Every structure is written in C-alpha cells, then in structure tokens.
Length: 105
Image (cartoon, rainbow, N blue to C red; front, side, top):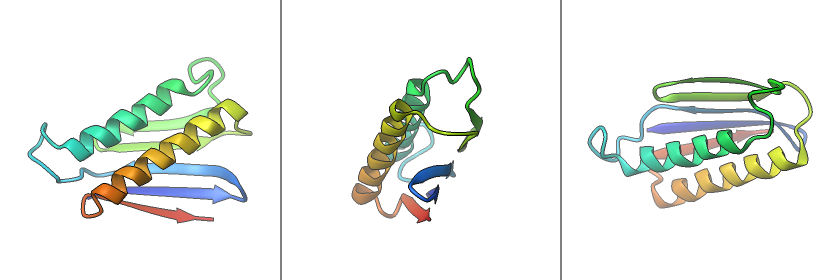
C-alpha cells in the first residue's frame, strides 16, 4: 500500500511524504503506482525555482518521495501543492485499498 502523510502547520504545508508501492498490479503494470508517480512528479516539476533557490528539501528514491518547504511557499507553489493533494485524494477515493492518506494539523 502507498502511504501519503501530509503535515500542516496552520494552513501551510509543513511536509509531504509518499512511501511504498500500491500493490494494485504486477510490478511495472500497477496503474495506482503509475498515477501516483505521475501526479507527484508533475507537481515537483511545476514548482517554481526548484533548481535555483532550493526552497524545498526533497528526497526521492524508488518508492519514496519527501518534500519539506524551507520557508514561505509562493502562491504559485501553494496552488501546485493543493492540486497535488487533491489528485492524490482522488486516487485514494478510487483505490482505497491501494493508497492511504493521513493528514496532521
């Protein structure tokens, strides 16, 4: 199962961690893993100045992604991250046995 942990500090995102494989299909043919990866890396690619200012601490390896903002999140990035969370929740609604999201405030 893929586990998504979202931590907020007030209204702001403090961290986002995605860990594990969905197990909804054979390795390399798992549509839930593919969808989760696609929306996650699409969002990471859309974040402003990710390569220039290092505004985020990002760790990624197979089956694991962690994102922690180092400071204030721009309005643009806030929209990107809110969209990512909505997309992950949509995947969870369709495949609740393959992905689980927990939020902490």
